[in-house]
Amino acid sequence: MTEVDASSAFFAATDTGFEPLHFAQSRWAPNMITGPATCGIVARELENAFGTADFVPARLTVDLFRAGMMSETTVTTTSVRDGRRIKVADASVLQGGVEIARATLVLLRTSEEPPGEVWVPDDRPIPPNAEPSTEPGFWWGSDDHPDGWTQSMRAQHNAGRKRMWGRQIGVVSGEEPSQFVRCAMAAESTSLMSNWGTLGVGFINADMTMALARLPIGPDIGLEADNHISTAGVAVGSATLFDRHGSFGSCVITAVANPQAQVTFG
Image 1 (cartoon, helix red, strand yellow):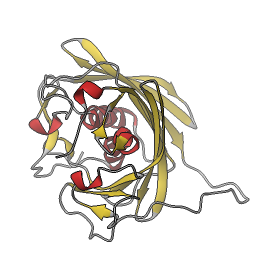
Image 2 (cartoon, one colour):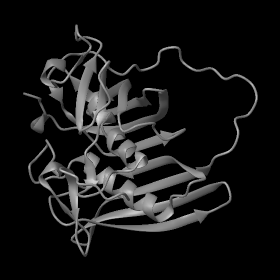
Image 3 (cartoon, rainbow, N blue to C red):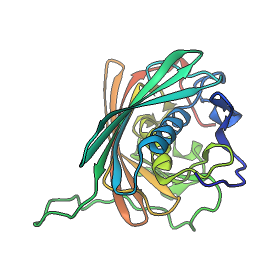
């Protein structure tokens, strides 16, 4: 990882693991770690251990089955398969010796596109007309807002399709996040994009799966909701990852209703 003079990050590296910083605090509760922090640190560790130049990190699945707390966090990784065209690795996120999340990374070797034409949707996500970011920060958008994009989350409290655009903060203080790690942090917000309605967000996601055809170009990444399906307090959400060159990945989450701690953006 490149050393930078980072002003904000989710974690500080220690001799034994990672200590959460205040940026890692979840909106659900001040003693909980936010989902992007967990996905970011596990993506970092998997990529550092198994990433290579001729393989694309094509799928990352993170199961968020226990709430992470604002306490020291460690990540262990294991190789499952080291093949010629496909590599698979697992990771476990631990706090106090207790597993709070687990992940699987699939890496695919790059090659040439096959011949022929394949259907692709005509409707592609479009980023805001903002200048490229130089600092972490976000724009928020929806179909039901008259101006489309704003920098106010409160202004997007509506029933329209949601989207976000911007630059993620660092995962570990003093490091510039890789493009893959940026994607993992952005992808976790699939739950936010697909479950955000007129009164905020009332679902908390139990997992995140991100599938990439390529890595993004530049530090700014967008995420646009594709679908929201919910019945009896169980939801499925999907979204598309995009940059200024087009769409490059898809994400899906499952979530459970958490109305007693409904998150609003006042």
